[in-house]
Length: 598
Image (cartoon, rainbow, N blue to C red; front, side, top):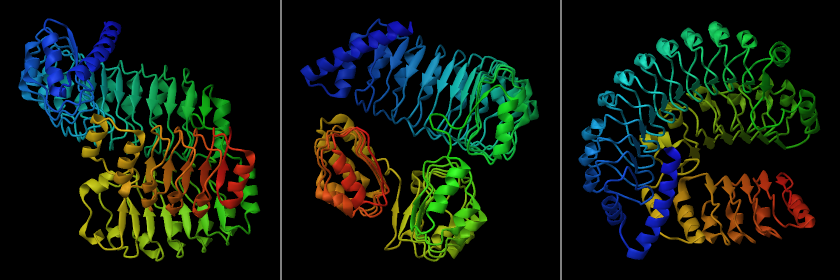
């Protein structure tokens, strides 16, 4: 059935695209033509048409079993949708739905409901209980803050995916679903799990990465068919003792938590094959003992090399005794030695993309530090040592796990550039409002959407987001208009005025000179284009720290790159550059790591 459906959709899409071009129809007119042509059929594909409204004539297709409305611009469905009594599968992903009409819940024969990526659905009504035959429910990437107790009445439900929402808890009634086999609830605000979880005797996959869990219910040990358990990026300090009963558990991910000791119960799991444990303050001696005690393959982090050894790290630190700039990024460091505090000449230190959750006491001795990057680590609490760095001007803590900012930040009198985006801050910290020296502040879109406090709406303070704010008008234009790569790039550049990161992998042959207007940009990704040169204006990106030019056609690099004094990573892989040209840029940027392989 699914194979036949996919083949039919592919044929329908290619045919409808050619027909629309030939007839010059609007999206709604094309949809109406397709509806008329689908009378008596069991499936209909209206995806990727840029539909703003769905014609009410959809209600005439009473034989429909499968309806695909994905990747449109729908904000609502017509009440006539309730007339499709035989419908078993409906795909509504990547629209702009705010709610589903009351008539929708009359589709009592529905087996699959996919409403991923609408971003505007705040709640699931109690009438979801009417979908007695529902087997698969997908509600990722919406604005859900809770699930109704009536979810427990969906006795045939086998899969539920509710990741990337704002859920703080799951209802106890979820334990009333006897056939449930898969739960995906990543990237929410979950603080606890219901004890009823242990009633899910058929549960095989439980994905809870990137939440706020501090403990797991002991009842989880009753989920005897669990084969995959994902707990990464929470705040767990222990695991339930009863986990020894999970006899078929194969994959366990507990990265990025607060486990200070190796959970001995893991050693007793007979089917365990992979354990991911990086980013926990577990002593290395305990890890080595665990390797001997458990048959599982103890992975440090998927897809990455082994971390730098303590000896090699100490050697790097000792070699930098007289340096003013030190780059220790991407080394999978989980603990800094106290020796770091001896580097009194340092003015700039990059510790991004490691596994750090704390700093050594000696860090407070780096009195000359001006710029510090701690992005992409595992800090769950603000490092107290930072308050002693009274010369620090720029601090990057992007992509960590901070839920609050302490008053100690006010002791950092020189701080004027702060990046706290992609953390777990739910409200604007009061401390920010008191930091009158701030000139640039990077925050997550979640905070931006709450509105900028009056105290921060002052002249001289630039408030940014890591990848810009979603621009719906631009999104519509990019999807509906036929634009050249350069025209697309220009639109995206203009929309990136509030962003620190920009990606333009569009098949460009020329980068618009307007790129130079983004003076606040810190990361620029231009990989996979057909560029042979860069405009001189690239040298105006005075704050740029990372530039990725992989997979282009450069044979030489512009002199203007040497103006990028804060550039620390320049990636030039898969370009036809002569070795002499690479060496030239390395000499011009002595503090930058230049990556190059043909």
